[in-house]
Image 1: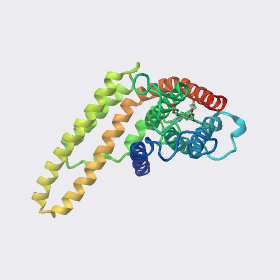
Image 2: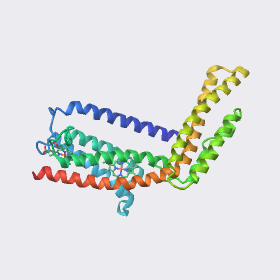
Image 3: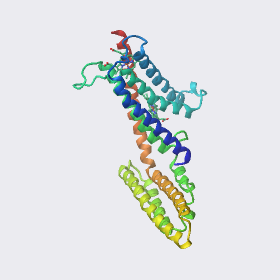
Image 4: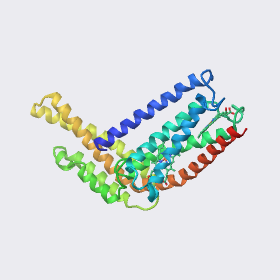
Length: 295
Ligand code: HEM
Ligand code: HEM
């Protein structure tokens, strides 16, 4: 993961955590319905929140339209649309949860309430949750979130660019040998056909244990050399962190190559699951809006 992708990842985690805290906190403030109800009257707070959340989710659908329909081609840059798709895909559902004041029909547990609203809510939460999963698969087969789709060859050559591990670790040949061995095995796996879920999981665990083992070994070698050459402790610690990070980046890049084809397949399956959910959500939300105005 390069610096830009890392800060994007951290930014997203902070955003999601804040949304999580606000969602849990909102329950205690809104559930008693002392502030407002979902829509006692047209254009009161509860109603407006429903309207706002609904509009946010309609707006996020402009991303797939911008991507596919020629008419929208000149309208803004695709990565910006994609970013807003994801942000609205979280903020829209949050606004709707606030709109509902957490009062949702649940069979046997909370049987009073509107069934169509509950169906719309369930589809919305599934779509938004599935989108978050999709984002994860997406980053694995693209150059970051806003880059073009990667190919296996490109990804393999990016491992070479990840830093000349041979030169970097010339003082620790055993560590270098282990890393190269891992790469050879991983690249052989990357070429195998089928979903390869077993290999996919195994490579993930191997990468994790290799990262730990190599970090330990690196520390022992560097410490021994520092004693020999009478180097300053702080200097050694700083160099160790640099080397450890470079090695971890290398292992992660090799792991991503080995897992690439599985991620590609998982992403295409995700699409098949995601799209019908979107249709169900749109249909049930429209029906809900129709029902609350009709009755
Ligand atoms: C995906 C979008 C939406 C979802 C998931 C949703 C969900 C809900 C839920 C769970 C309730 C509470 C129902 C109950 O007490 O059992 C509710 C009530 C209500 N919603 Fe929505 N809502 C959405 C969009 C909208 C929109 C866009 C509007 C208006 C334009 C709207 C208007 C209302 C009204 C008026 C009520 C009160 C109905 C009543 O008390 O009988 N909702 N909604
Ligand atoms: C109510 C919320 C959401 C709706 C209705 C929605 C809807 C859609 C639709 C219709 C597509 C187009 C699929 C296609 O191009 O074939 C899509 C793609 C996608 N969405 Fe969402 N989404 C929502 C939330 C999210 C969230 C929260 C995220 C991520 C955090 C997300 C990430 C993605 C990704 C990664 C793609 C694939 C992009 C691509 O292939 O270009 N979505 N979504």
